[in-house]
Length: 184
Image 1: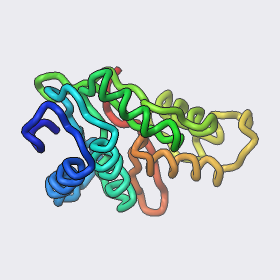
Image 2: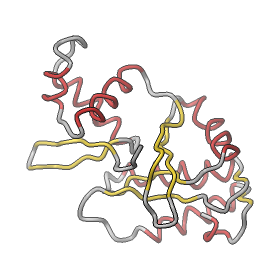
Image 3: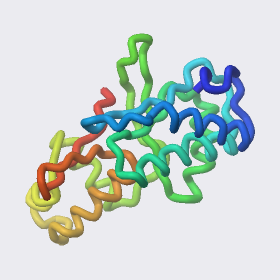
C-alpha cells in the first residue's frame, strides 16, 4: 500500500480512491484458482478511516461482488491502522481478515477484525476445523445442533465467501469452501 501512494501516511478519500484504481489495475488477470490478495501495509504508519473506506473496503466489496478468485486480506497493519479499520467495520457489523507477511511473503498470525454474526462464526469455525467443506458436510458435522438444513448452511457459506473469509471452488454444480491459507 505504501508503494501505491509513496507515503507512510495514507489519508483522505481522494487518495483512497486513487489507491483503489491502482489496486484494481493490478488484478486485471483473473487467477485460475482462488488466492489471497494481500493489501500490505508494511511501512505505513497511519491510514485514516476515509482512506481505508475508499481503498480497502471498496476494493474488497468490488472484487467480491464480481465473484472473482481474488480474496483481499489486510497484511501487516499496525495497531493504529487496525483501530481505524475497526471504526469502519463495527457500525456495519462487517469483518475483514488480517494477517502478517514476512519478508518472503509468507503469511502468518491471521485473525478476524470485526465481529461475525453468531451463525456465521459457527460456520467459519467449522470450516477452519475441517479444512474444507460443503454445506452437506457442515450439516452432518453439526449433528443437528444447529437445527437447520443444507440450504441454510449453503447461505452461510456463501455469505462468508462474499465477505472474503472463505474461498469458494466449484466442482460442476457443487461448491466447496476452505479457509484462506494464512497460517496461525
